[in-house]
Length: 179
Image (cartoon, rainbow, N blue to C red; front, side, top):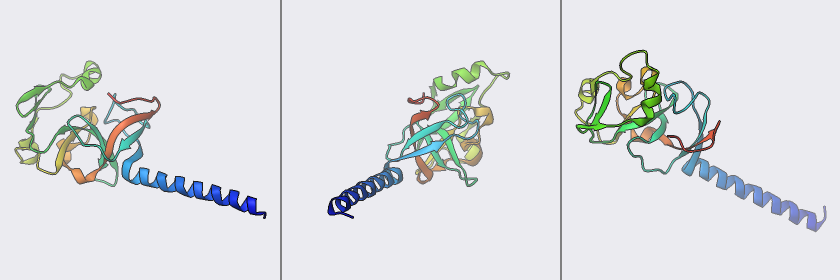
C-alpha cells in the first residue's frame, strides 16, 4: 500500500470514528428516537409514528414525554398534566389545575367522536393517590385517548427521573411538531 493510500485510509477512519463519537454523544445525552406503540395518544399520535425526543428539555405542563413505565418494562408516551405542587382534578369532563379550569384543545377531535358523555371520568388527585398535590420530583401524566390510556390515574405520578425525553419532532409519517 502506498503512503498516499495509507494517509487516505487513515483520514477516512478518523472521520468515521469522529462521526460515531458525535452520534453516540448526541443519542445518549441530547436526542433520541422513539416509536409510538398503542392507542393511548390517539389522535395526536398513531401506532408506529416515529418521534425525536430531546433529553435536555425543561419539562412544562402539556409537554409530550416518553418515560420508563412504572408498571412494566415498556416505555410510555403521555402528556404532562400536573407539575410538582399542582392540584389536579377533573369534574364533568373538564380539567382543573390548582382550581382553575383548563382548556384542552388537543382533545377536541376525540371528544366529537364519543359515544358516551365523558372522555375523562371525574377524579381528584387525592382520591387517586392519597396526595393533595403532585409530589416533588414527580409529574402527573395522562394520555390523550383517555378511555384507552394507562396513565397516572392508574399508577400515580411518575418520577421525573424516569423520563427519557420530551417529544420535539414527529419524523414519520409526517415531519413536524406535535399539537
